[in-house]
Figure (tube, rainbow, N blue to C red):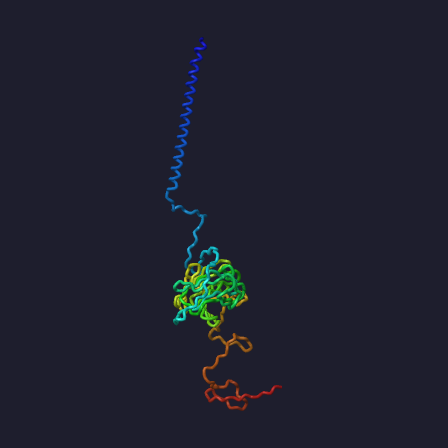
Length: 371
């Protein structure tokens, strides 16, 4: 009996303990779930706050971090403005426009630059694309078809061909030209992209071509790739436009964007979006330093340095003795008729002496017989 009486209280105590443990587990589970819920809310709050925070623009760039590209502008004396290289873009193969012939009533005013356009190379192979000529009303005057051949072009030197929207000149020789258009064209914009493939010079961009070998060209990277200048060709002879020479050079296999704008007798010449030279009539001025006279020339045998210096004879310097070669000087032609002066040759034996102020007498030349 005693043992049975003691076992009942122990059973109740165990049930109470089990109930207490169950409650504790329930509370712990609820607390844990509440904790996870609160942590989730906190994380979401922090995430949203971070995204909504204003950006900071005053953070210094690390010393070895990326640098911004320099702005293109006028170069300091003795340097060349470096423009960023053009990104490689596919050529424009849109609808072509054959050269538009001006109306018969269009007249060219005196002093206005006019004529067709073209391209050229000098001891260099090069490629050209995206050529476009637009009139003053922005209507296209010429957009060549460059899918094979040289339709609508006139070739006066070199080996020209086209494929895939690119016109190429493939011969390393001098004075290679290709032109198009009409002499009556005026007030237009000529734009294109060009790159040198191989050679010692850059390329020629022709404008205002009145007739064959009478034109202007922008000689970019000429004179052994030492300078650039505008030259005027008249019946084949050429002269440089004063003030147009700049120390602009060309890199191989780099595309350059070129634009030439004609307005009356004023021409604006730009490269890669930067104005380089403005030509007004027979003179020009540039945004880059003057390149000075050329010192490198290329007549087809490669660039050669040459400096034309003719030494002058100092004043009061005696003439060289007989038998000593002197600097070759062309004999001067007398301005008027010859008047014989006093003879400096000794008179023949028996002839009267002649004073310095007497009437000069011409001596007859004596015939000598060769022995």
